[in-house]
Image (cartoon, rainbow, N blue to C red; front, side):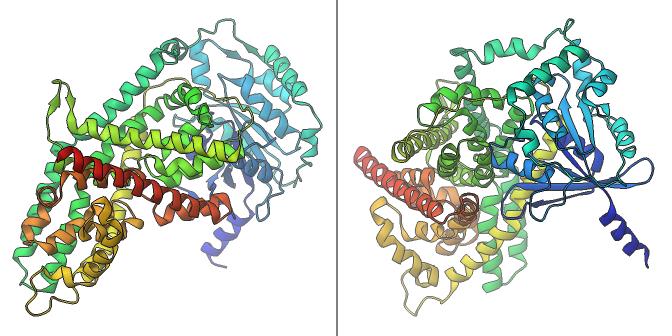
Length: 629
């Protein structure tokens, strides 16, 4: 038997350790510390919940597999995430192996909340290790934990870990090495958990804390003092609004120089490539199709990265759960809870992770409403469309000497999406009946400085995703649009540009019958079709269409001035209104179908968003025409 085959068989025989704990306990950081790059990520069968499994080698040389389970507060599951964790650790999920042992990760500064889950898992009878994480933070605060006594009280090994530091997992590795993996253990029935009332579990938690932990010298933390201001009912919302306003000002003000740099590089490369090619279809494909299409999308990368720079900082420093708390009352007025804030904020990146994040919402009705309104949040794919039209029609000037007018318009467009989402949620609340009272319960993590390494990795991941889309999906669609826009050629004696007589031109003119009442010409209609695959493709499609409609290279490199000359202000405002509500891309509708288990909801989503988009554009176009004369 060869060495690779032996390694595969050894990996299959390796014991499986489940890693679980409350959200914000550092569980995933510990998983990354244990496994490094030896991870594989997939989804659990039948759902879109992420399944992360890795492996490592214990000090004795024994290979061990480790499964990072979704965060849970209790095995009495209230969300799909918690249900997955419960079923896997209890060995009742089809197609999943029951773990041979469990590592329960707890936040050493918040044992009162974390120990309930530990006691519930203990009743399953599996070998366990308690990883007392963030002990460095507990020591700084003056919290004293007697680990040896805690081990006695719980009847399991207790080790101290610091997941964010190299070597902070060493004690855990030794503890896992000492577990009796050679003796298989079958988990007890979940009825062992349900047999003990929650009140009794909480009393046991308090008793263990009194015996093992001293808070006499707890100096508290700076987070509590900061929260007196940040969570103030009057000051807090003002701070939140100011932060959001700053973000959208920065998207335009900070991005101008890098956008000009990218544009200049694309222009120079396009000129250099074009100068070496003879006139013909190949030169047209490369100059008008690729540089005129893909280049016009690539230039918006700095704005997307600036937006995510702020989102990642707010997330990493611990502010986002506070924002959810501040918005709970407002969202409750339209039938949602503050817990919907995180999925909706995720939708500013892309509606797909926003829809998937809604599974953390306990109430099924709230979860469904959040899924249905998530696409109204202005995803990053809409940003290139907004930026193009704003740059073409809104002058670059300061308002009152302080505010960038273009950034102000972008802020208004984002706010229009948020207000629309709240209005649609209110309609769904009235249509689907009032929900029961489900008060918001959130653990507010301590504030801390953002980790520069995590920030860099997050920005690189967003850049990689964007560039991958540009180099695959968008490039493919641009080549397809160029082909449809170039063939068949213009007939003899034609008076219009060749694209007018092409397949794309025919499609555009057919759709123009529907969209003419809202001010869209056939060129815009052509761009709307590939936008169903990815919204930012509309910018590339316009670049290709106008490059083929006009004088070649100059048009391909200067799309904003071309549309400023070709469209009326009413048409530009109408298209902005359209993209506030534009029907979702097909990939998002597919995820909604999987998350809801029904075709009804993606069809309802596409239908209501098309109706809103058309109505908003119709009103905007005709009001603008009247107001502008």
